[in-house]
Picture 1 (cartoon, one colour):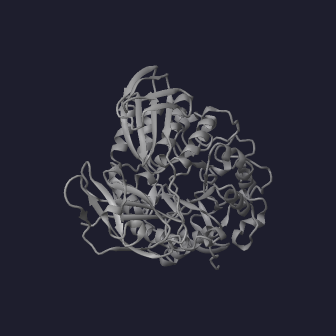
Picture 2 (cartoon, rainbow, N blue to C red):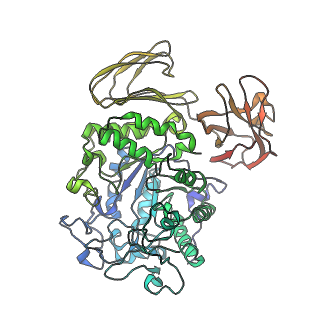
Picture 3 (cartoon, one colour):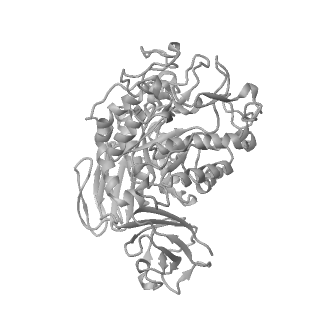
Length: 608
């Protein structure tokens, strides 16, 4: 099968040398089968896997891609800018202990689409035609300026079902079988017995799933070639399942191949229980070629607002304090619930706590991801709300809920306010029950104050806002800043206040967003970029571009290229101390080709 040429959108940015910047996006994660049934699709080969009455939680309930397409007005009205769907690949038509693969993580053919998601059986052969419901969904998303995230699984295929184990097809042709594995497509080491043993975690079976052998070149070419086909049809980003269960070298090869084929693709992975306290997960985020879902931040939010633990917002603050361990903390994908864990209400949270959690992820560092239905307070607490009861059928589409309104407001602010996309996060007032913090970048600031308990009045020193009167984006409450501080700020019970000062976004023919890691700076130091072009001062340190401090490991800035757009330039990183001589990194000059137009991300590491 011949790989498609880049899409029209990609062709217009042929010189794009980096992934699309997702830091201004608001992601909405959908379990396709449980979102919306359009009643226009095929029900699959085996009718015994379906339950249109929605009583059997292990069976298909009817959600489909047409249903997602039908609800784009609803999603866009809420401020959603990117949708992430559970995997679309053709699934095994089988059962395990009465469970069908409604979730999409038991793929048997990575070059076909699940028959239940499309409008006619012919559409399963996605890459033999051009006008499927998938194509219509992608086209409509892009027309609206929205992005599509494909969920992929490279670690495993299927568990033992009533129709076999690990049978893999290439557009309908059987090419591998776990039970007759003559070409060694699979590992055969049994299940994981020691979760502290890295070798077992990466090579043994996860929950009985047939685990691919990444050392097999034929397998690697199949999986990479398959995903490139999807990228060629307009997919903007990849969410990668179970990344901790394959070695880092595989992911480095995989991400490199994906980005060589489609440089604009944004990639993030699922490392279960990732945390700044987990050294292996931090290393993966820094060196694999992809960012990750921020489970550490998620668990802190769930402890604070789901279970109302005594440490409260202190646990959230401790996670943020460790951001310097990451090379890209602002690229971490943040969330407070997903398809593998009980929803917040099942932990004991009320609607107000869900609202506070939503404001927190929409204003904190990172890229926020909401789980479908959270805006409608969707939950089912059967058996503690664990899988599959955390995946109810979406039933309400009200646009006047508090979370729908808040998400719409804050998503719009994220898209327009550089502080919420790139800025430093700094605590201003932290107790178990109150969390006040600022996001700052250049002349943009966002001050957020969250209160999980009863009414209280607080003072905030050094608010990082110019003196004046500000109005909360969410409540309309006024606040006065005088002498750089705030006195007697009144907080109602379960209050969430957001005050902003929005500076202009940097505009340019070719805009470079540069992030620098690994510089041991001191208070008062500044990191700058000097180079051999007009935009970087022609090596004149007095005219170099200054960067902004983000955390102990990251400096960030935007460089507007006009005269040098489309040309090759040389540059160096410099530390400008508060006192003393400038410190240049000890290396020959870096060289880059500047794109003719658009936005490019540079990621550099300081060299002594």
